Length: 116
Image (cartoon, rainbow, N blue to C red; front, side, top):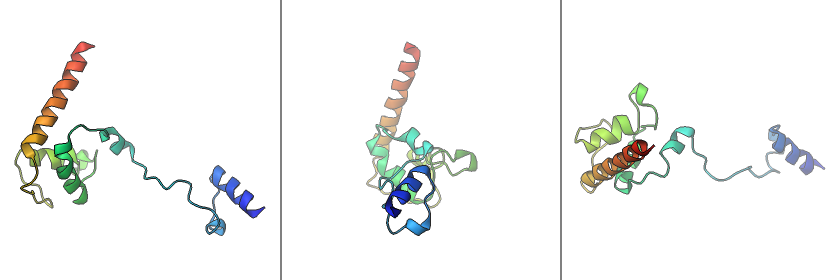
């Protein structure tokens, strides 16, 4: 009976700590924020190591207004050869490949926009 009440409570969002040891978490998959969802599916694998380094330095997708944006304040300056505080550029990063992929994606987006 307690497990049924606990399951019902979880379904309604009434989960309490009294049942914490009896109920498994609702989901074990990682969720993404709307900001990250916008950038998922990016076709720029050469940019992935740069993006990962920027994320680990604390840059966040969409925070460009507070000068902490992932792409605007970290990835793009690195690609353009400018230094970014808290991020050391690794010589193994393919900066030209990343820039080429971004330019191609931008051109594709513009072509799609013009076709409308």
